[in-house]
Image (cartoon, rainbow, N blue to C red):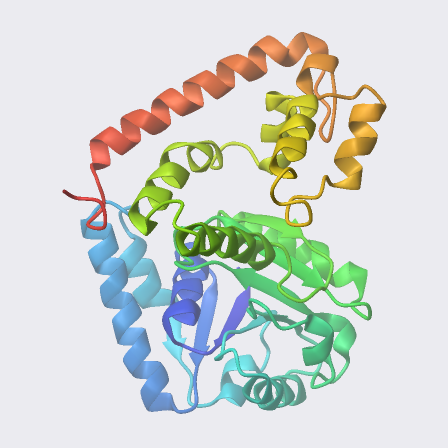
Length: 316
């Protein structure tokens, strides 16, 4: 069991607190005042009871949250003696700087993570005493249910500080992925690239918002729970991707310029799974296994969609 301090008890901080508490860690929740932290603690305990009743949390989860999370009197009380501290205050750099100064002064040796979604970690690190113990630990909303977590060291992060936190994340059921410190990191760079192109399509009159959402949900979005963009490209064939880029360039030359890495692989004859490798490698004797996994995954995804039915956005 570790002592975890969560500074910022709002929706994200509260969800992160639930995760650590359900795994048996002692969690101290802090905010600008004890009253706010206590009010949000009551909320996350009730949420845990509701989630458990709906079958979204395992039996005993609500009791674990109630037993393992406490509302601290202050930020300093929360972080004193903590093994790991997660800063989850609003995405305002001045607020984060002020909070990180208080955290690091009160906890001079603890490892500190920030849940920032877009601010470069190096820009925050200057507010931390001994910044080698500081890096990004970016959970996604809603934190209890989204497994991926971006782990983002800045250039001065002590590399020995990272693996214990990654192991801590795996212990609460998360999938850490290490990312270089860059504005927007990976998640939001990709998410906003998709959103930007979607808005362009609407503005150009190509399709409605409803039909674009339907296409994304039922085509490539259907694949994304199981395969990332590079694995999907390899299975489609990188020569096919290169041809599609050429076709798109007949009207959108700059917008869809062929990525140099794609051109280099095609020129080298590395066309994806059909040649044994492209962006990702897979042994030739495992191709049938990959295809079988893909087909099972998509069939089960359709069964899940059928079971859940349409979302309130899509009910007709």
